[in-house]
Image (cartoon, rainbow, N blue to C red; front, side):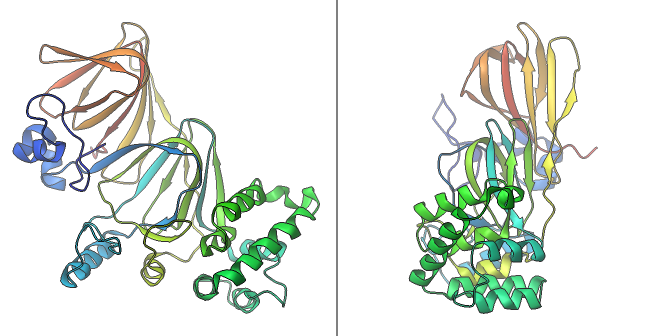
Length: 369
C-alpha cells in the first residue's frame, strides 16, 4: 500500500487513477506543505501486511548514499528498471519496521563473533574436515568485521554440494546434542532444519547460523536500519518502510542474488536488536492509541482501538488499514466503512474522524516537532 511508482495503490472511484499520480497532481493538498518540502512530491512510506508462511529471502537494504550511487551506476550501465538482474530500483534508502500480529520470527544482524563461532562449532563447521573450516579458523583469529566478511565470502564461494554436506552434517550433529546445550539458542536448530529442507545447499542457510534469531510476541515490533542483513522467517505482521524497492538478496530465494554488491552494502558487525514496545496513549474515553517509536524520518506506526461510538481524528498524509471491527471514516461530509482489510488514504487537507468499534493500523510521517 503506497505510492511507489513500481506498484502504486489504485484509487477507487473516479477515473481509477493511482495514488502516486493523485499525489503528484496536487502535492501540497495531499501531503501538506511540510511533508512536500521535506520529501518532495511523493508519499515517503510504504505499508504492507506481511504474511510469511515460510521463510523469506536473506537480504539487506542500502543506506541513502549507497542507494543514490547504486541507482546512478545501474542507470549509467543501461540496466532496464524492470530487469531481473537490477538491484537498485530507485535512489532511496529503506529503513523498516515490522510489528507482530502473531508470534513472529526473524533473523537480524550478525551475532557477536564469539557467539557465532560457538554456534558454527556446534553445527560442525569447526571440524577440520569441513569445507568451511579455514573460514571458521580465520574468523576465530580475526573476530571482527574482517573475519565476518571473510567467512561470508567463503560461504558463497563454496560449491553447493559441499554446502549441503555441511548443512546435513550440522542437522545430524545437533540432533545428537543434549537439549540443555542448545537451549540458549532458542528455536535456531528447528529453523535451521526448516531452512535446509526448503533451500538445500543454499549459502543463506549457513549464513543464518551467524545471525541473531529474534522472536517477537504479538504487539512487539522490530526496527531495522540500513545495511542490516536479515530475513523474516515466519508470522503475520505489519511492515512499514521508507518508499523504496532497493533489495540486495543473499540467498533463500529464486530471485537475483548479487553477492559482491550485497557484501559491499552489508555492515559486518553485531548490531543491537531494537525490539520496540508501544507507547500507550489514552486521549479520551474509549480511545487507545499505541505508538511505535521510529528512528526513520519517513514513517511511524500506531495501532488505534476505538470502542463503539468513540472517535479519533487524523490529518494526513496517512494510510489506515482496518484490522478488526466495523468502524467508519468521516470527512468533508462523506462516510466510508472501515471493515477488516479496508485501506484508506487520508490527505493533509481534511481532518478525518475514525469512529469505532474497530481496531486500526495507521501509518503517518514521523512528527518532527
